[in-house]
Length: 163
Image 1 (cartoon, rainbow, N blue to C red):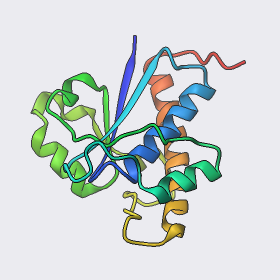
Image 2: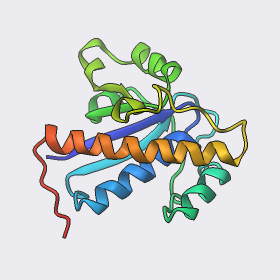
Image 3: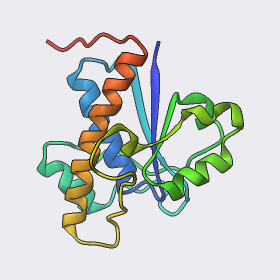
């Protein structure tokens, strides 16, 4: 069984690629690369084909996470059938996903911070702020990634291959 997880924000250059990179790091550390596939997308087409925001890349690289190979894409209808989890960064993007997702697939949708405690319910968009916003988002997403991975491992009966 391959569990597929899609992370979604507005433009797919700040929050969702960071979430994808952090979650992928957690998946790899757990030895579950063969069991879990990740991707990220945006609800808008502003940045299709572009790499993540330079500030997001620098924040991640400063913490040992390389996301320079990621490129922005827009959510498409097939995503709602292909991904077991479609994880939005905030309520606005969740609402856009809900409007595009057929009722039988709505159970796949969640907010990223549903998988963490103490951060509130939305990952703020750091795009218009300073570097400190990217650091805060990185910390939020690190914790939420661990929570989501624990849920997936438990829910799908996956065994960590960590040595």
